[in-house]
Length: 263
Image 1 (tube, rainbow, N blue to C red):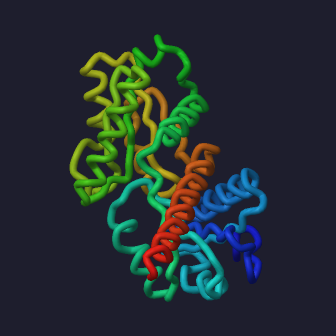
Image 2 (image 1 turned 135 degrees about the vertical axis):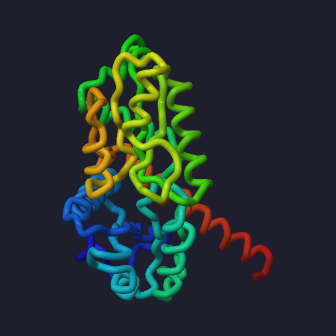
């Protein structure tokens, strides 16, 4: 089913937002995507939003692009990093479906992600607005992990920026996926305690519940608390709209340049 209404002919200049999620056998994944779509629609009621999944969930991308039938749309990946899914899977799936759509950038890095992480930490009991609390608290930024070294560098840079701008006692990246090299959650917790953090919180850098968040929570026994996944945080919905707008405006500018050049 579509998330939101998708008319046969959207108004000129207002392409639909085609949200592309990976999909999961865990029903909480699709429920989170649908909750995000509801937030997007609340923020921008006139925007038509469709959802497609790469695997496990329906509808799949070819079904959705067939329903679009050439109507204007911008594909927006529900991904945090530019790793395999962003670089290979989604472009290949769009080509295979015959859809020639502008493809927005992934969500990270962005200050909105740090705001969403702090929202979840606050909900879990951390006084994120207190300078003194932040100075005593170490954060494990628990990501899925990737075999792509560039994705790892981006996540570590985000962690460093978070510590620098907000004054946490430390921010250590840990990975849940076995393919990633680096700390696992217990090692990151131990490292923060050894560095002097009085309290350690685990902040899952993941978009939806599922196997990896469950693995992170199970491994966080020595931490003081574990926050929720980013999920349908308002900051994530706004960031998806940011990426949609950037791609929409960029595509329009590219067409204009082509026309001026006589393309």
